[in-house]
Length: 309
Ligand code: NAD
Ligand code: UDP
Image (cartoon, rainbow, N blue to C red; front, side, top):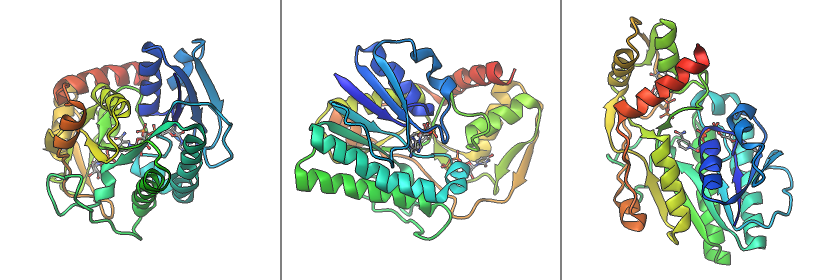
């Protein structure tokens, strides 16, 4: 089986490439390194079943005879997508279109990596897949949220019009080794700050909530979803909700740091709550998360200790 992983040199993508290779798949990774890194896939380059093509998915794609396509290409951290607003929208429109066209021509199954951000600043809690969301279409986060919503709509159009075999995974906050220490998301920021003895920067009063999923659970969920025939959107995430202030304190505790907490302004349109309702994926493919936050964070802190020194 030949599998394309677009965005395969990123955090989630590189773990997915590894997981697929371990199971005997041939993997072709497409990435332009806008937010990914060569070092994430360096260990895979000698594997004869792994091929890397450095390219932008908004450019014409090579005619690869793939069976499966995972579309993970997109900046994902808010500071990353706000630094590259037009590129993010091009990737989530032209890029998604190019990969759907390739899937259609090759009769491949395609999974689109969507996000909990399609729910915006949600007025329904926890978020179920049948909630349509509360997105500001012109705010600074809209370049990401609307690109993802457009990609979901385009994916469903290909399914309905061409009968393409599609999947939509709405990924909730995921963390683990290989996140960039400076990517700006809460977990890498807090761990790097704690290990360096710098203040942890909590935005707002820290009462906003998130629910964090360990990378190993996420990869298993994405794989099981692709293996299934389930084409409605599904949330994948760990419903273990906590406030960002609690997260900062937990990371100080687990790192044994004497860093203090510093409060900074809350970014515009920052969602106040977020927690996935996961009945759908449990029923569709039998998936549920198995790694608790304390254990998952310990593993991630070990990685950052090695990287930061
Ligand atoms: P990441 O930034 O580490 O990885 C994204 C990868 O896509 C990078 O390697 C980047 O270089 C590549 N890329 C971006 N635009 C590209 C283009 N036009 N052509 C080729 N490659 C391109 O982010 P991640 O956390 O690994 O996220 C992966 C996917 O999962 C993204 O689509 C993201 O929106 C989605 N997602 C992630 C999370 C999370 O918590 N990590 C949450 C929700 C959704
Ligand atoms: N956040 C924070 N300090 C940081 C980075 C992020 O308080 O240094 C907050 C951010 O405002 C949000 C939450 O932590 O409320 C999660 O942010 P992240 O960027 O990880 O992901 P998001 O869920 O916003 O996409």
